[in-house]
Structures are given as C-alpha cells and as structure tokens.
Image 1 (cartoon, each protein chain N blue to C red):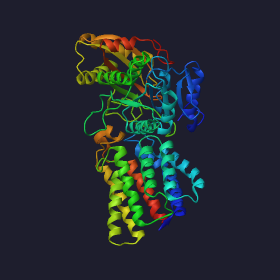
Image 2 (cartoon, chains in turn cyan, orange):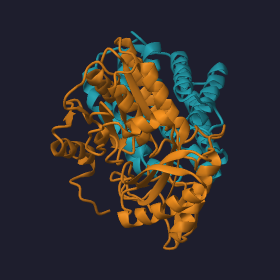
Image 3 (cartoon, chains in turn cyan, blue):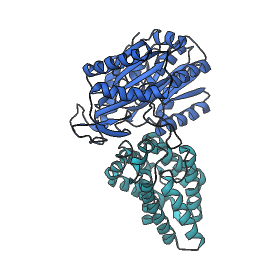
Image 4 (spheres, helix red, strand yellow):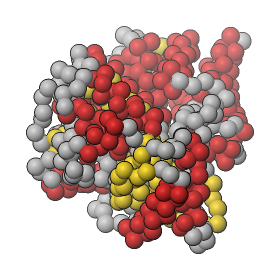
Length: 207
Length: 329
C-alpha cells in the first residue's frame, strides 16, 4: 500500500505542514505551556528533512528509526522524547520492510501510542497528544474492520483525531506543563494533540 | 522584541561560548554542543550533572566547579536539553564512582534525562538521579505532574556537590541531595514577563497594577493574577504558603532571595528585609542568607523566596569550600 518513497513524501509534507503551522502551535502553547511547541517541532522536522536524501532506497524500519532519533536529538522539551520514541517504535515494527499494508500502518500506530503512554506515563483524558492519537487509532481500526477503502479509513482517523484535539478544551490537564495552570487550561486546545492531527492529515493527503 | 542578541538561533551557543571565555579556568565546552564541564576533571568522586533549558543563567553552567557540579547541559531557551547532549555530558564527567543527575521536575526534563541515563547505563556507566520539586505554588496532587523544580535546586547543587567532593559514595550523595529536596520550599511572584527569543512575545501579560503569583522559571503563567501590593504584603503572602507547607518551627534555615533576571538588588534587599523580620518573629533562626541571581528567567521582573531547613550535616556542607563562577565559598 505504501512504499518507502511514499513514506518519505509523507515525512516531507509533515515537515512543511509543521513549518506552516509553527506559529499557530506556539500560540496554542502560550496560555498553558511555555510557548515553544511549534518552534521545537519545526526545528526537529527541519533536521529530518535534511536527513531524507540519505535515506533513499533504505527500508522503512531504518527510515522511521532515523526520523525518531533525529527528533529525540533536536526537538527537546517533552515532545522530542514523545514523538521520537513513537517514530523509533514504528521503525522497529517496520524493520526490513520496503512496503507496508494498512494493517501494518495500524500496527505501527499501535506501538506508537504505547510508546507515548510509556514515555509520558500518561493515558487518555489527560489533555495530551494521546487524546488525539487513541481515538484516531480506534476509528481507523473500526473503519478497516468494516472493510472500508484506505482513503475512508484515513478520513475516519483524521475526523476522530481533530475531534479528540477539540475535546482537550474540556479537559483539565494532569500531565505536562499544562497541568500547572489547572482549570485555567480549560477552553484551550492541547498543542500536542493538534500537531499530531496535522501529521495524520498529511498521511491522509499523501497516501 | 529588543534584546542584545545576534539572531534567535545563535542565542544558546553564543551564551555558552561567552561564559566559557569568561571563566576559562573553570569551564570547558564540549565540541558536541552546549555542554560545559570542569576545566580540570577530578577523578575518584561521584560526578554531578545538571541542566535544563537556557535562560536561567548563571544556572546551570555557572555552578560547575569545585564543590558543586562537574557538568551542565544547556538546551534551547526554556527547553530541556536532548538525551544525546546529556549523554555526552555524562560520558565526559563519568568516574568509577558513578554519576548523579540533578533534574528539575518538568515533564520534558525528566524524560530527556531518563533517556540519557538509560543510554549511559547501556555503556556501563552507573547513573542515579534526583528530581527537585521545591515550588509550593503548584499542588503536588494527582492532578499535576507534581511540583516544579525552581531556585531551591541550587541548594541541591551546593550541598550534594560538597559531599561528592569528599569522595562519598553515590548512594550517600543521592541521599543528601534528596534530603535537601525534602527540606527546601520556594515560591515566587512576578510583575513583568519575559520574552523567549524564538517566540518573540511574552508568555503572559500583566497590566500596570497587576502581578502574577506562583510563577515558575520559564515565563509560563503562575497560579493566578492579583492586584499589585506593597513588597511586605507580597512577602507575607509567599511566606505564608511556604511556612504552611513544611514545619519550620524552632529550626535553622538558609534563605535564598532569588532575582528572576530584571529585579534590582535594591528590591531584593527590601524583600529580604521583610523575610528576615517575619522569620525572627516566628522564632525561625536564619543561619545563612543568599540574595542575588541564581536561577533566572531571562529578563523577568520577579523574585522567589526559598527556605531550606537545615541540620548539622547540611550546615557543614553549605559552608564547605566551593569555587565556581557563580558561587564561591
């Protein structure tokens, strides 16, 4: 369904999207965090883009692991280890593969969710990126089980992801720096849930 | 935004280089990034490493030297350093007695330092860590990731650093670091925010007669805003929170009045004037007072009060020799 050339295209588009939304993501971070989510992620994906030409012809495991390592070593903050661990775990799941099916994409998302839960010692309903990731994965799994086309599966995932990001406005954060502002965080959308939704949107638009 | 910088992406590197050029006898910068270590490595002692985002100068690089830290890692402004950088620092300072990481309690810092420790352990380096969480403004409840590590962290550097210098074991150094953490409390307030260079705008806004209470050290909002009041009343409010959190009655304390970056010494002394009077009234004996900039938040106009409840061991280690750019004893 997707080969390494296509996955590299997705990664490139994610980088462009994050750069485009850099200020928006940073603004979301301002009232509840420390105003750096967009800046940090854009720096990380900028470095990822520089590495892409060296990854041509490589297997998907190597590509995703390299992306994860690059994010861990350039993003910083909490989103570096979180997104970095997620990409590295996907890389391990896709080791040696030159092409992946929808099933393998879902399996990759599954290990990514587990990696974020473990590294962040967190779960859903805590106003984090997991509130977009988990509903997105569930919706995609359901759609795939119903035998829907890949486009419809990804569309279902994106809808659930954005709804999950929107839902973080109703949650009082209990993890991350947003937990310090307590109820003052109500009404604010979580930047991590938002950046994940942008990423999934790029997957949908590219595949 | 108006700052004495050359470009937002050069801030951290040029700051570290400038610091090393100012104190070549104390500090050496690693080639790999913004990591500083002692100019002369000392073997046979537990090595202490700390760090965090840039923007807290003199922390953390300013506390690298005899009797305090062996290394400090600086991330981007207010952003945790990354595991690979921390690992480089650990490798450079590691001795056969092991490494103690002093980490401030922020989600990102804890994650990045933990990842670095896992990588170092794989290379056979023994690494333990403590997490500082002295800020009483934030409730350490189920609903947060726990209290933030703020200016009280510097007492951990000093006291654990002094014990490490004597050749004590990793477990002992970790234990004394934890004892400081258990006995130090801090709270702060600000009257003007700071601007992260790459963001270009302040993390919170205040009108002319407002202050932000319970601020952290990253320009993030505090617990609430309220109307500006005379300094003594602000001190009373902050001390009430600190004294209600730990039983200081009849004890001896070390006091730190920490400037956040743009609060003049004149005002810090006015603050200390009240702190000393209130503590005397309550029968809490001040053993040592430190007034100045230890853990700043770039150009924030604010301050914090830290009280460390001392015992004989901590008193002796607090007074032990230290020779670093920012703390000389």
